[in-house]
Image (tube, rainbow, N blue to C red):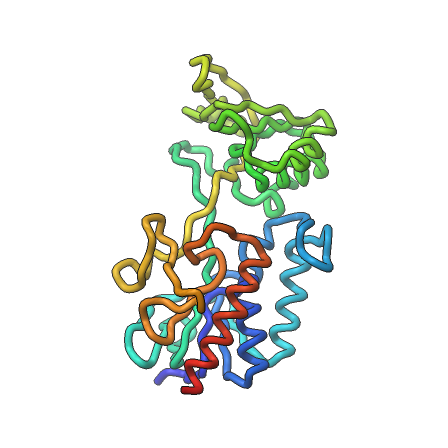
Length: 303
C-alpha cells in the first residue's frame, strides 16, 4: 500500500525546497524525499557571495534557513532515504524507498549533481576528498593539492587557507584557470597558493600518509613529482539521472531536457535545478526552476 500525496519532489537542494515552498503554499500535499540531507552541494560551500540579500552567508546556514521555511509552509520531508525504484510513466507516479512506497499524480525531479571523481585509481582514497568543509580540518599545517581551476576550486582553497593548511598547489589542465579573476586574486593574496596551469595529474604513488603526485605540463612536456599530504578534487559535477536513461529525454551529457515550463516528455513529471539541460547553473536559477515547476505542477493537478 502506497502513501498518497498530490506532489512528490525528489531532491532537497535549493530547487527542490523552493518548489516545495510554492507547492505547499498552493495547498498541495507535498512530500520531499532526499537521499542525504537538505541542501545538496550548496552545503559544501563555505561562503556564498552572490545570493541576493545574504552576501557572504555560509552555504549550510542558507540551506537550513530554506529548509525551515519549507517545513513552516507545510511540506513534509524525509531525509537520508534510500530510493530503490522509480515508476513514473503512468498516471500515478510512485517511488519505492527503504521507508515505504510513496505515490502522487505529479512529480518534480531535483536531485542535482554529484562530484566528478578523479579518473585515476590509487590506494589512497582516505586522502582524496571532494568537500573541503567536510574534510579540511584534517590538513592544518600540511601541504595539499587542489585539482581543478574553477570557482569552486579557488573558493574551497580560500577556505582551506583559513583552516591553516601549510601550502596549496592548484593543478589546472587548461592554459588559464576558468575561475573569476577576483576570486583568483583573493585566494593568491595570502601567499600560500601556487598554480600549475596546462598541467595534468598522471599518477598517485602512496607513501604511507603521504603520496608522490606525478604531473606533466601539456605545453612543454615537463614532468614534475610533488609530495603531498592530501588532495581535494573540484573538476566538475555530473547529473544524477542514470535511473532515467531510456525513460526521460536526456541530452548527450545526461541532463534532463525540459520545456520552458520545466515539463519533461512524461505528463506530470517536471525537473528543476542543476539536473536540467541549460547553460547557467546557479542557486538563483535553480530557485527559478523550482518555482516554475511547482506552479506548473499545481496547474497540471487542477485540470
